[in-house]
Image (cartoon, rainbow, N blue to C red; front, side, top):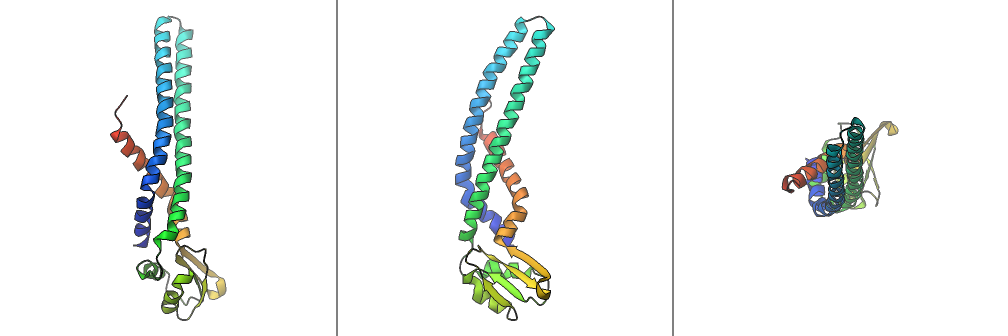
Length: 194
């Protein structure tokens, strides 16, 4: 299935760069984690020495604040990683699709409902293939297109965008969440506990 091929190719191409980006975020988070651990230890020691409830309240507030800051750092790191992954994914689209690549183009064309398509938009390199599959349609080309196709029927009333860009856009929320969680799991499973 073309979607699975796209996802796998994106994962392979971005894996090394993702690890580097995540390593940077992990280093920053680890530094904050150590600083918070030291501060928490100081607060614990301080709270043990203080017998009054005001000291305990202060320690709870500081602990809650440290936990909140830690969550914010992780959320910001995830957002930066997601943005960088999206840039990498979009850049990788152009390299996924080879000229006249029927193995990806044909399945995407077959996903279209059976109707008389009047106009098809493709990459210039896929024009001949599109003319073969859609002989009755006008074939438009777009050099900025990474791959796939857009199709119009019923004088433009029916429009289906089955381009790689659109497929990435639709899959991105689930794809990026799964990739980030998988990376976090991999990193945490190889990271010795402090």
